[in-house]
Length: 173
Image (cartoon, rainbow, N blue to C red):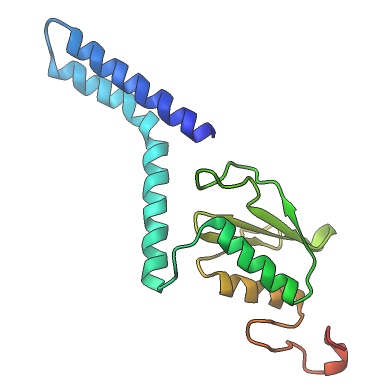
């Protein structure tokens, strides 16, 4: 929501500056250049967001991944976690939704205490944070689920494997 308001304020300010320049009796190219130079830093966040989305969509297309909203990706991840009997809970997002009309719930937490794994879906990209270090970033939801299941060490519902050598130590008994 904040980005939407910011976008309209910047465009309105830019339109006002251009209208001011056009309303002057004598037009000077130097004034227009100065206005463009002053307005450019305010347009940088919008350009960054646009090109980041385009880059992510191109990467997803190059990998042959289907177009999916953040909610669809999280639905797939939570269903796979339910199949693996891993408890998770929704967490309110620190930022607004990436798609218009989407819910604010884009983050899930797995586990408690220091062993908590945070999963955030943002513009078709999945970030998995297990430690205080930088998060692991995935474009494929299947790979992110396999990574999470590898961290938890339980039955993998996607590959149908148990990641233990001894069956007595496994989660299935």
